[in-house]
Length: 465
RNA sequence: GGCGUCGUGGCCAAGUGGUAAGGCAAGGGUCUGCAAAACCCUGAUCACGGGUCCGAAUCCCGUCGACGCCUCCA
Image 1: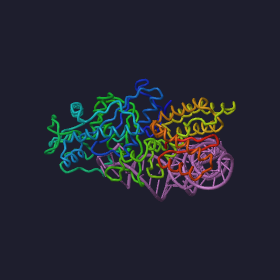
Image 2: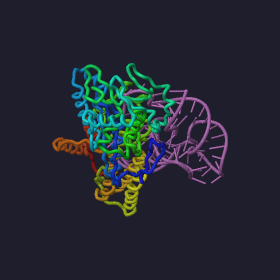
Image 3: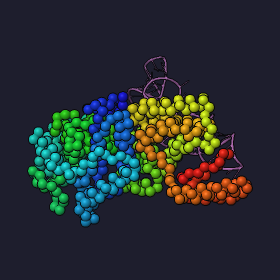
């Protein structure tokens, strides 16, 4: 039984899907107006890991991630660049998809866009007006009436009375209550707009997700996810809209990831302390970012700096060490050692599942994998053959795969490998003659070229990386 | 100010009632011409102060501190 922490109840709960063995999961995507940063990567990774694990546990996951392609910032950027806003956002949608692929994140089952959901959004708003949960203002804006929703504030644990102090009304807004929020915004001159019963305009931020949820997954979903900075107001307002519209519970479980921290602060576009996914991938392997996330708790803040990244990189290397082939001199394991290895392999899967079932405890899961690595390496040191290592290494590959780690070493071409082998051969001759300075020179120079040499009493091995 | 999350060894970080997983770093050792890798060994009583309990890092109260939200935001 999987248990997960539900923001709605602030407790861990048993995971029960609406339909047996099927999961309807909606995760808030990004607003596409410039390069996505590693904070977005964290969120995408968290839900990729959750999705992979649910699939590993036998669920069919319908994973929807939206793109907000109509928005103030997109319009502002497009105006600045003299570009059509929808073309601009389309460009960044493709760009983000590439970033995610670079991070080995599985494509969502579906990626709806606001600009392609207009008829349903308008229908949704009309429905809310009919039920008196919303009202059109004279200027063509439409607002959601928060006082019409009895349990408004339940997700973020706020009460309307407590919130009014901090709220504000922009010039030109015609709200009946300060906390009312826009479902539809009347177009300003020159802005991209769509026709509606309230005149030309475009949707507010929150309504799109409610509408796309309905279109893609139906009235009720199992999991709704996103960064914890979306709890209020975005997700709170989504609940208000959807539940007021359908009269049913919207999402059973709400999962929120913590924020990536850069220098003690949340990384965000508005703070400007940004490292883009592209910049990251130019310097480090995708596995490093994933390991950074895996080593922590998805709900907690995640420290992103050279120190934590270096450690993550070393951790990835360590996992890879378990996949190395048998020693050159491997002559087979003694019976006792073979059964020790078998015992760890047998318990690994069970332990892995048991910790992951507990609210996706990836840090615990990684610890299980390190135990497996240690057992494999110990067996190799004791003379295990490739054959004897196989089932353990298969297990390691399977479980790291569930977490989305690739553990690929750098590859050379068969051409370059020939030359490396030649150099190793020459070096071995040099070593026989005990010409150590020359031998070490070859090793050092190859290291600079990305080839690591390891000598043992039984021979020399090498690898890229 | 309000609401929320959290405070575990040098760093990252599991564990949420029965005497503290794992990774990184550091030190010692085996192996090695040297190195690297791998393996073995070495370290914390869990922010602080009260309380509940036979027993608490784990529950309750308080203090201090950090972060997030309350405005766009993964």
